[in-house]
Image (cartoon, rainbow, N blue to C red; front, top):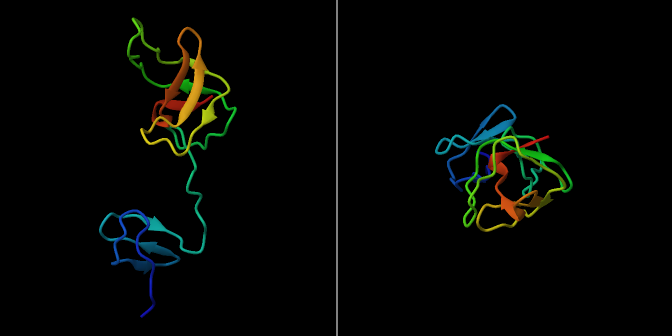
Length: 112
């Protein structure tokens, strides 16, 4: 029996091969052990890969602490900067007209 790698998501040792993929029965994650996945890839709400300098659109209304108004759905944000090691999940730094410097989560934006 081959020595298969542990699951990269849940670290389960009970993985098995299914064709060219390795499958984890505990969390359901499937991956190809022959390809290297990028660890610090940041994706938008639709799964598109984001890069520094991209423009994004906010996909839902966002309340802002300390402000009397909120960031409305459809607000376009230009020239974003990605922060892949953000501990609080806010992995995009940007400037929004009327609000100034902000941090956003990639799960609330889509690539424009």
